Length: 280
Image (tube, rainbow, N blue to C red; front, top):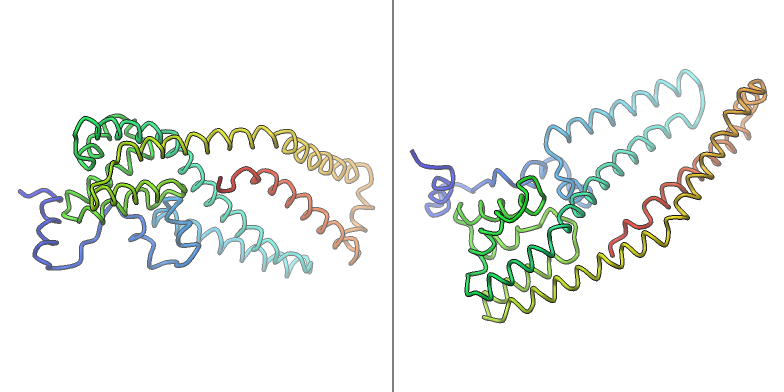
């Protein structure tokens, strides 16, 4: 019996059909969405089942918004759809960010281990295949290294395998690594020194990000405190004088002011929480 890798290699060599990488996330969802959202789904590693669940929740938000519009006659009821879609998008973005963070935790160690292996005379591609043994099997970098090995075993060219490494990780230093590795293969340049410099740049980036998080920690707590106070005041007002709250909601201007204030507080909290998640 032939293994899956051997069969895939035979298909590539014979040109019988286009190979479909079973580990590629992009192949799973390329027919569903495109553009920026498509890229976000790839970076968040969203499977077909999860994508169907997201679409189901979005349809639920739309149905709930239409039902509330007919029942309550409030113009702001359709905003539930926008809020629900925004919430789903933020969940996906948060998942992509966590994947990038998980990859970065082991990235510098990977670069330094690869540099050490290259200095001993080991081929960089062989060293990358062996590096998977150094990391936890459930880590993000281990998954990327396994996918890299799968590309090589299936008969893909070195350039294709290198370009696919870390393609689903939203990290600014990965393209530099791929470029350095390809140049070293084509031009014969020194790779070990370049890898050490890349590791130093990544460490500096991590240090700067920690400083930024520490600088805005108090502002984040303040925004949460302000939002909590606003919610507490609204609850107290509703418990002490529910008739006034009902009249405010029934008044055209009152409901607009309350909805506007709620949106401003919510946007402020979200902005403060996402302030340190910019690409640094």
